[in-house]
Image 1 (tube, rainbow over the protein chains, first blue to last red):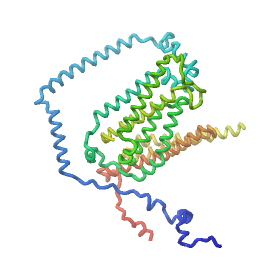
Image 2 (cartoon, rainbow over the protein chains, first blue to last red):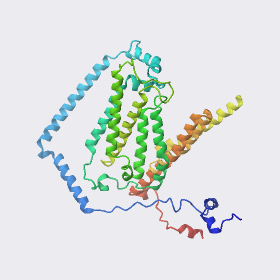
Image 3 (cartoon, rainbow over the protein chains, first blue to last red):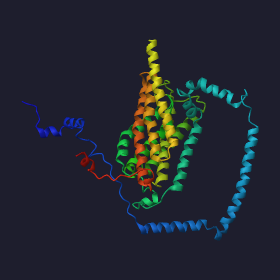
Length: 321
Length: 119
């Protein structure tokens, strides 16, 4: 029996298309990957007028100084206090500088036994090959906890300042959110994003997980993951990212990560801050499951940083998830 | 073996130099040109050719191991992302530029005109 296909069946196969492409008779992108012109913006004169009026009213309320005596007084006092505070700060700093040890002195605080101990006994005591990670997440873990909470507090502040409290379903117009000319649903960007976002997020996870084995850690890995999320958002818009990252997701993730960090670290404090006795084994240095709590803490920090970056971007762009 | 090592060193150094030359072009272009599109072209050249040549040189110098694989990943990533970002900048420029005649001529090509010319 012959295996020869008929002409029409052959035209459906992949090899026919490849052959056509080689011969230059067919462009595979011609029908499928094409830039669509951006949708024209429909002007809404009434709404724009209302917006302009509202803005003018608001500006009048705040900035018309001639009718506003408290503001006038405040401005005068503000200048005086500004100058006084500047002089105070300069004097303070100059006095502090005059007490600094001279350059290259042997008994400077930098050259004490602490840094020597980090270098000599760091691997033994923390189990982390990367000394820096061992330092920031073991010896000085309390400090890093503070840093994570600073990030959390910064996000809270941005939320308070920039969040739009609107009813559900009532979306901003593009005029308000200032996205009139931004490329929307760009085919090329979407294609690139589809290819690039999974490797970016995988790389971020790799950086977080290998924080105690090499360069990396929670902060840098979290930043990479956050950047991947922002790229995805830019390509596909809020409708798609809402499905997996909403306000609730952020709340749950960051609060549970910070709580996990607090619990893990307070356990370490209760068992003796100098690690006299700890149930968690340090493991073999160099293995991925080693160095006690550092891996867990790294993951927590990474989650917090990624969420913070994404939230900052979202807040500055739209004022809501 | 010494000769082979020398050849490798020379090839790697040559590629690195090539990449650095492209980076120099990029820097000059970015700072000398006055229009977005021209600057973008210069910058994209450094991001693609410059990084490609320098990483190739480093890969040759480093030999075939895990580090050179990571360098290859860097090159692939930049070759994906740099054209996409250039495309976005260009698109934004075309949509928002109010006086395009200053910098370039806009040609109104009807679809299918090219084919007519070919015939």
